[in-house]
Length: 83
Image (cartoon, rainbow, N blue to C red):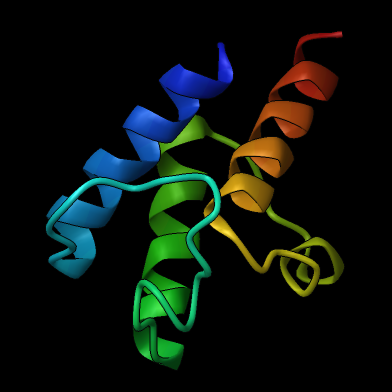
């Protein structure tokens, strides 16, 4: 999957599961710009895992600050899975 495809899928997950409206951009900060509280952050993480059939390691999750970081993490996990 391309980064644009991953971003679009994450945007869809955010709309359906946490009620996000608008367009996601890679530079958007997860907490500040998306206004994710702990419950919304957990919901988003779980639903992204379900959507892509991956597992976000807690250590990896701790490094994700922006939407772009999440896109990159998902892309790397998908690439690792497909190898």
